[in-house]
Length: 204
Ligand code: S3P
Image (cartoon, rainbow, N blue to C red; front, side):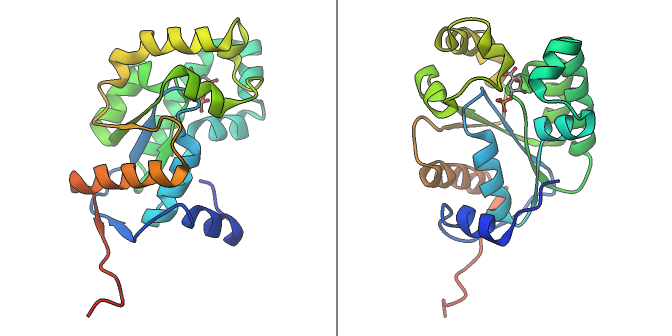
């Protein structure tokens, strides 16, 4: 679980309009391609709802003492997917959290099935050019270093689309600001009765 400093909380809170609280005890799991905003938006969503935030890649790196790209180099992708599956599974069964997953997690049938059973899944979606714009430096993403990153992202989007479409909720993050994407995520969660607005304390 990541704990935020007061300064981070203030920064994240600046991108959140309104006050909300969860109405569900299920974890909210963010899925989607690299660069779709899962980590940045997940942190803000956790602050908005007063929940803990976990990021499967960060947990894997902390536990193994290795960077994701080194795990791919040393042990290969299949081993990484196994570690990812175990990490996600163990966080689905703890108290309600916001869980940000690595881009391929929801495309592993076992992991997807577990998320669909135990959590609310939100697919964050953007075009490959927008994803790459947000990613910037691709050196920490091993899958993007095997050729032209834009082409790889386009191919991955095609290959993974049918998996991501199985997520319960769909939010297009495009090149939107974090504030606008947060608004869209909070709106869709509220429309589906997973969260509710907390009435303004100043209201009579
Ligand atoms: C991957 C996405 C990465 C990381 C790994 C594999 C993928 O996470 O899990 O490099 O298969 O799309 P982010 O989506 O957080 O970049």
